[in-house]
Length: 327
Image (cartoon, rainbow, N blue to C red):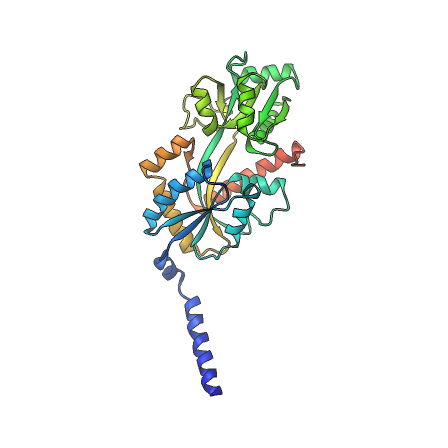
């Protein structure tokens, strides 16, 4: 009886070792054989959630399996991002998130329970959304050069609002100040919805805001746009000049990307990357992204890794030079 058990154990071990030694190419050929879960670390109804549902539907079509959006909101994206990091590296749990959880958040909060570098496998730089510099409709400032000139002549007199300390709008304005040598007074709010009415009424002088939330107010004439925070003209608002036209080298973007957990096999990474790139060439997907105020991304996982590293280094300098903390 003992010898039979020993033989059974040996056979089972051999079978399992054969399973785990399946060639990576075979794993990729069989993937996906069931539905894929796409974690979004923000609530339903927000910009990231809307983007994820557009992408999930097209990605499912490309891969031939359902892609189900799983909203794991909480702690400014930390809860869902940690769930993505701790998932099995088999390609059936992916994460769609933004620069707030993988570039800026870890710099402002070193206690975040994951490393954006060590705990994730970058798959695709999905899309980007610039900020737009806006002033009240009756402001005497009508251009970026006029804004810079007035601020230099009147240090600290202009105030700028933001959706909160440490967010992209705040850091965008801080970088603008650092690169132009001006100084304005920061007025943080608990969200754009509270700051925008004060800007419209002239109680704020200027604001850097997400183009997706600012565009309706710009088009209704409730605020005046001076520039977008891109290197080149944005396809979302081609009528606006890029801020880099006046401040060479300036750029500030919120990016959206897709990750897998660390250790995701390269053939699966490549397969999902190719499917996502095809999704971004779909006219309907491009139309939906444009409506939301996003320029499409694309490229290789290595492109994504390089962009993420460069942006993290940029924001690290802004945060350190500005002595910005969440406390």
